[in-house]
Length: 439
Ligand code: GLU
Image (cartoon, rainbow, N blue to C red; front, top):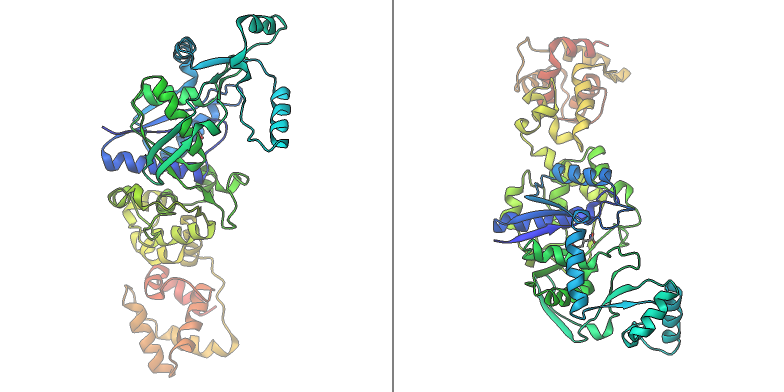
């Protein structure tokens, strides 16, 4: 069985980029009949909040993602401590006493000499007495993982073969001097403990993966398959992280976007498939394949999302939206769905149907409209009424094309654009039509 995880830090709400990672994991789990774990990476207890965690759960639910398991790293510190002790005993974790300032100065010296700013492992040379002396000064150790300094290879399911020489990396700090964990170790322990088979995440983690593969091996765990997708940029080609406001999933929901428009966009962006609206996950799951994802950054354009939202609504059946359209009939929905971008836009067409409408009537059309009014067919009206009426008006007035139709539209709706009048006219009804034509 495949097991994937989406691992947000509850230090903020998720944006379209994070949601894309979640959706790709969800599609993979659905496609392979596997499990989707929601893991809150909340080791940073000062910045993580319950509020943000709830918000993330709400956002995922809105996107149609139902985690099969939910985990909190903050509840697993005991486990992490036990594993860390084992790594210390095995010599994989070693104590370091440098302050941030000292490390910074050292890096600057290395750079000045044209050397890569890699940690020099000075702490490995400390004797037991050196360490005691440092601790007597009140210094507390932070703990680094001793990398194997060899080439780590994996066959990335999106990027293909990747080789990273960990000799070019600093031994990563896994535990801070106050005993708190950085992201890396808890993440690896959880991936091993929860049996994660596939790690699907952004390419900003590619280098972490080399380190994590080494730590997994040190733990004797099974190394999962990795798939690193490219990151989203804005329409301007720049990264998204700086301007989260309008790109947060919560904001998109508030702005009236359809969840499946956001899902379709996020799922198909940067793939070899055309971006098109899907009304549910079924088609997306069927067409899903990690190999379709491009390595190039994918551009997220809000205008494109708007267009997709409109297309999705245009094909949405009444049954799917009836609950969100109180008091509106199927005829109304079918008449107006082609003329909205967001669902809330129906209110404008509801007003055009039920009024108030300020008819727009040009002086030179008064006689024409009077003739049109007397040609109005008797009730009941249906979808053929518009045709029979306009044919009668054409015969009576000799007008055709735009000079025939536009004055009728302007008088009946007050607007020069809108849904097909054939569909709208029966909804407006004879009484209101009479009133608007005589105004
Ligand atoms: N909390 C990490 C992040 O949001 C998770 C990365 C991962 O998937 O391992 O970047």
